[in-house]
Image (cartoon, rainbow, N blue to C red; front, side, top):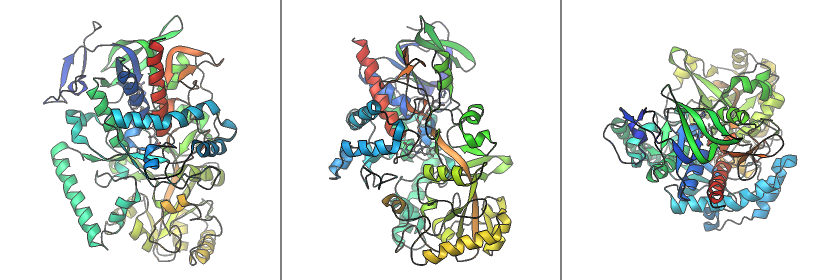
Length: 592
Ligand SMILES: Cc1cc2nc3c(=O)[nH]c(=O)nc-3n(C[C@H](O)[C@H](O)[C@H](O)COP(=O)(O)OP(=O)(O)OC[C@H]3O[C@@H](n4cnc5c(N)ncnc54)[C@H](O)[C@@H]3O)c2cc1C
């Protein structure tokens, strides 16, 4: 059914998937606003649900309020944590759902939800097979250990897979609507695989002919693509995942309507039957026969809600989320409007990410996620008092939890290293040699001083405390040990260290002047607290009854991990698995 109001949307939104010569030109087009399933949000949660429902024969529309599709997912590493996946089995990795269950029971503690975890472990591998066999979405195995591999049921390898790299040319004109990757983690717009192998070539570019040739070839191909398409086309991680999901959606004639902001749900006799949407300033009503699915990506950018849910923000501390600015919790607001009640209850409300703020031109800033540097030998972190406070080679979430515990009411910390280390590995947004680092010192992002005492004075830390901290660390580091915090003690620590650095890939002294520091503030990569649902994704009222016709997936739905972060991919894994479960459930209810 095509409703009367004529709307305008980008020609690239074509439901037919046919290529057009001028995709960015606005063309008048009447939008079909009637469907079986209306999905609000175009990240992994929304697209996985949309594709599953469409494959089951339903008519699906995806709304996206931004002018690009992909949400946080497009900025992510594209890693999914799926215990028992076929890629691990093909590598003869021994895993069992009992071991994964034990691990998750340990990780989630009192918040362990047996029904949800059972569904996750059963349908996760099935979801992967479905997407790999029936869509453009493909994955490859990774060597990631779990983040707490020594805990009961933990695994040293096998549970995380990553989206296979993709040539975004396959999207045709739609490439223009694919959210670009985070600029702060690309190198001149170029993307890397989420494994250590490719980065190692960049670290070794001045020392190995093979690495120099590899890097040169990559740069030449990248700049040729930028000239032709306006962006890099050899994409990896979450950008590749979204491109693959979107290609599938377009092939299946699922429209992804960008610039479409869902603002209110339509209710008929208590059941959700559609949404009021603003598109290019015009109001429209979209009707859904069977379901509206909230997939708005959580509330990381809602400053008012953060004040009530993030303890450090309530105390006025700096916080910088990596999620897109549009992720302001619309899904939660919409659910509450239909009778749900947001009740944060997890041990941590979000997936923490230590972040630094990169000053840019005209007062603009960018946020850098400290994903890989903390693990490298010779990089340590100190509190505002100048003491080490954690094993820096633990996961970003664990590092964030340690900052919340140990770095004051308004937590921040400093990453510190010496000249040898920063030139070898870089630090934060500062790249290794031969890329110059002077501009970062001049911008104030990177603090530099000839001695530790001078560095301490520059960053406002007690010089005696910093000297004592580094002296204690160096004494053990000379032997490749860290008796204070056990860096290098787990397979996960070592995985992101430097395997060529002996005897401990995570430990080297901090002793070769000059010295450097970068300020690290609290950040997140998405929220854990979310809307309460049943296992099929039905949004629940406070009395646990389901709101008819309303579902939530992805970060809008409360995390099943209890506020903990067991391994690489524990948000995208459930986002796609429960998207698959919800899509199938909605389709099966059509035949009930
Ligand atoms: C740097 C980084 C790396 C990460 N790496 C990983 C990783 O490797 N593995 C992992 O598991 N997790 C990772 N994450 C976290 C992961 O990306 C998110 O948890 C996940 O993408 C959330 O998916 P989603 O579908 O719920 O939401 P999103 O992908 O954020 O999509 C939500 C979309 O909904 C849209 N929207 C919001 N409100 C409305 C509205 N009212 N109307 C219409 N549209 C709306 C938004 O604009 C957005 O595009 C990473 C995150 C970051 C920032």
